[in-house]
Length: 410
Ligand code: PMP
Image (tube, rainbow, N blue to C red; front, side, top):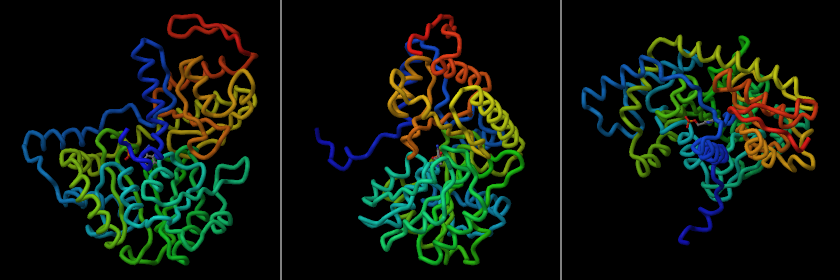
């Protein structure tokens, strides 16, 4: 009652919904293992804690300018120079409440009703709903069957006179893929030729494995930031494990930043000043904790890929970054288990108390997203339970949280 048709049409974030379900089970004393949530276990880097604490004691936690504290913007400019070799001005930077708000405000700034935004499957779950909230239309481009990487020709074929943006997320949530330099270069060129925006969601830019570097869109443009259609989104949540601080940012032309600033000024005014100061500490402080986190994720990636190899019929492409993988579980979509990836996720939660996220929500049915952002012990335990639940050649009995469970369905 009282909720608009439009609000009703927006889906809840499935990751958050599953987390809620898992939390309820945990509260009831159930031994839930989380392979669902994209959140590292570390505390914030010490420099962030120190700077935030000092600001809190200093008492100067007031509204900040809408586009962010000048000092944090300087830290972001420094970060952009260091990690992308790109020099930008303060007018090209807006600090937002997480990368999520940066993406939403950017979309809101560029979209009119009925405009189209190209999303590359598998895509992050929130993109389609954000586009719809701007009364625009998500247009999904799927990869070739069996592949997790988009195809430039298919992207080009999807561009119409209503296309306003292409969203590119590499390293990719949910697949862990890092797109090739060729692909990133082609998208930047396509966008420049057709006058459309490339929204580069670079939130996992630093979380890459095996010496890989994620290609940067800036390597493929000659345009100055104020003339460019590039909108690069970043944040501290993943690189520094500072999810709850809710600090993200976008780098874009003065015009786009100006429009995003107007939207922000009328919705949230500015981002929490305390968290902005802490973010400054993270960006300017010692970076060794980033490397520690990256190594831990790479180790967990190796563990999860090895464990998945023990599950008959499951195919996985080894991730090159992030802390996710997206194995193909379609072998287990069968009577007695599940008809689709959502049912399979629910099955694993109910039977084995493991949280996974259905591939359907990322635009790739038949797959499950597994997060290995938690402890290695959890990754191993989660995989042990998944094997027990799905593979008939495993022993029928399993010990979970001090209880013996018997598999009755396979
Ligand atoms: N983009 C992607 C691809 C993500 O996975 C996430 C977080 N899960 C975000 C953006 C949002 O990040 P933040 O927490 O900074 O809002």
